[in-house]
Length: 355
Ligand SMILES: [Zn+2]
Ligand SMILES: [Zn+2]
Image 1 (cartoon, helix red, strand yellow):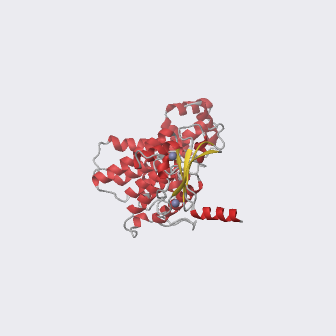
Image 2 (image 1 turned 180 degrees about the horizontal axis):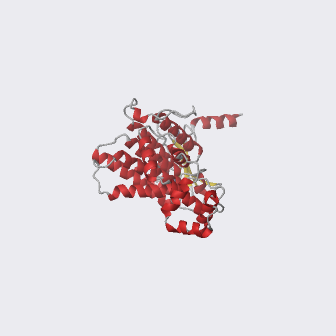
Image 3 (image 1 turned 60 degrees about the vertical axis):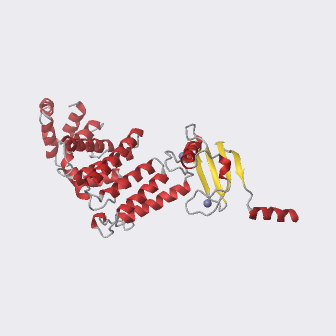
């Protein structure tokens, strides 16, 4: 034990103030269990509502289906040691006075890792373990990693959602969780600003909710009446938000684009530069240069850019055809790759000339 926890210990426990410092020190060093016990005995420690704390950290799970909540509670009850949390806070705190046990993302991730390791160590078969619990842990872990948002976190989160999918499909159990797999992947893609991909995942998640009367997908009512009451409503909200993000943030139309934000177009990365395709009904579709290349190779192998003149608009459902294509490498400077003068424009120009 370091001196900081000792300081915390002494300042928080006035009943032992009469003991000499030496005695306290011995006690602290004797065993960490004893320290935990002492902390428990301290009267003014307010127990935290861990579920609330977790929701604060992972806002995305504020409104999870009822079916998942018991598993989350099980995790919080069995894997969280209040004492461990407090010791950690104490060790990090500069003075012993303002210690409020706050759940940190780092701590949550560590606890989830430990809980997952425990399950994986049991060499289970899916029917021997509590699969719902296991899937919940995987889901929470994926969401927590997404929230932390390091590059390797994203890879690991993707991995965990894939494991969930495999467990469900191979064993044909807990199928309701499939909706959460896609939901998690949607959150992940949106965190990466891959809004098109995110939208697709949210739609898949919605499709997985077959029976809308299944109470598993209900959401506990909260005081906030604006919050959705079913997971389906929640997904529809996410879909709306993602669609508006797609509209607002000049974004690349390539579904597997990893960097759909406008800022990247200007920065010196692989994603620098873009193409803009406009249709006769005024849709503007953007692609990073690198993504356009990939998209073309995939869907129109061998075509050159000029061949897109007059082709059907790339936006789904639009009946327009492509009338203009621009290339931009440096902000403010565009190169026209092709441009078809529209009939109505042509007439307007003619009329103007006749005046
Ligand atoms: Zn792109
Ligand atoms: Zn169009």
